[in-house]
Amino acid sequence: MFNSSENILVIKHGALGDLIQSDGVLRDIRQHFSDADITLLTSPAYADLMQRCPHIDHILIDPRAPWWQWFQQRQLMKQLKQAGFSCIIDLQNSDRTRLYHHALFAEKHWIGRLQEAKPESGLQGQMDLLKQAGISIQSSLQPNVSWLADDVSHLLSDELQQQGYVALIHGCSAAHPEKRWPHYPQLADALIAHGFEVINIIGPDELELADDLPGFTPVLSHGLLSWSELAGLLQHASFVIGNDTGPSHLASCLGSPGLALFGSHTSVDRAAIRRGQFQALKVNQLDQLSVESVLAAVLPKLPTPNLRLTRPVLQPSYSAG
Image (tube, rainbow, N blue to C red; front, side):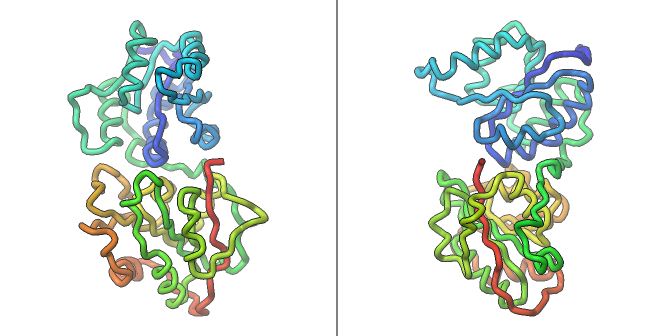
């Protein structure tokens, strides 16, 4: 059906967790089209992140402006038309990408999910799409984004590098406050009392939480963390506890041991966050989930604490920069 020297466009705008989970899918696409020139069309927030991805050759940024703001889309439309893509793989499966299909690529080979398909998860939908196109699935279920992680030894004390730490991901997207478990400060206190080092990871949407975190010290000299620094911190953690949010998916796809906390608003199966030593705990009312219940779930999985009852020495926040 295809030749290996094709010029291929892969569309995946986000969100962060979905994009990170697509690493194995992108690896399978690269394996199938080993000599192809592969361009990823994605959102501005993830362009720097995906520049590191070894499975693609180029990045195009889609501002996803409303159609009535045509002037913001005109340059992208021109680039897409002139690029001469012979095949488009739509991993986003949105109304916008279907419009791109009909408006820009009606005569091109388009690989997209059947509209009537209702996969168990977004990741399963992408795998179904590859199968439909005759692309062998070898890596899709094993995303590995270690290519994103930076060496973060300069951010950590010698004690943390030697002993490890528990990383707590306090927040989530501001658009979904119902996904935020409100008891991380109390969990941090409890973990510290058990002798564990704790790093509290917060993002730009939850900076207001900073004053309530035990022993919080802003990293003013460094600023907010980049995606690669965040990945480095999560990869180095002995254990990660977080909400249903992008950084938790990042930890899962880094192979970190951890636990994601889910309420009734989200399906764990659809999130497809469980893999390896990273698992999920789902309850009906997330705000009613007690610190004691979380401790009972994670303490048997944690390494032996140092028992020095130290306070956390670093609570970084991250940005999309």
